[in-house]
Image (tube, rainbow, N blue to C red):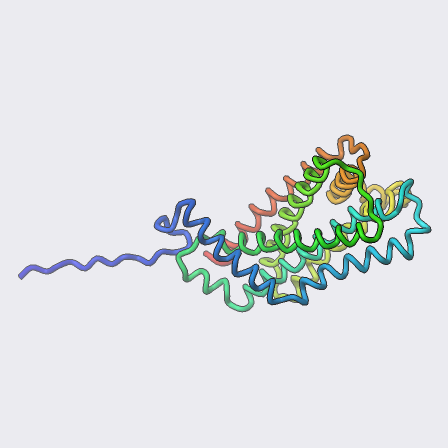
Length: 273
């Protein structure tokens, strides 16, 4: 009598070569991007808050404090780039809470049981964050124009400014994803994300750094947000940016590389080992 051997095939895992390839990786990422975009559309209160708070800050600084702040130009033209960067901080903070919520709800464990790429979960959150921020910053800029913001930059300057803001949002979203992985709960993710909301206040977003005490001035001029704001401000208002553009690009690319690598490593270490 002949015995037919039984061949057992191991199920594919998140790191299985059977599910490798660029096509499958893009398919996994697009599926989770769609999921996070749908969740963002349903969670309208969060989206509204991330738009309303920067708008309220802009109204406060332009109409209450603007008349007392000397910047050498119309204050609204000075403050709008800072408000745009503040808006991206609110959006990225929501990403940290979304990642933490997926971990707390068991969504990450469910994804681990499926044959998908391990990077797809974070890519979905980060891409959805960039899309949300693109919508919110566009609304903020349109509101600023309605309030009297009059940029004089060329079309090329606008494209460069938009590209830098999107790159900054991408880097900040990866930082937020890492915070969501480190946080023990959604509440702690919210607290840790406050750092991203606080840094613009220690920059040239609202007042020139020359008006600050020397200690705060040193902090403001040597942190990543100030060169980004100065570059965006220069591009939109048609003023020289000097070396600030390269400094802003270096900071942004560096943060993006470290945050993306670190977040991916944290995700695999915490969930795949």
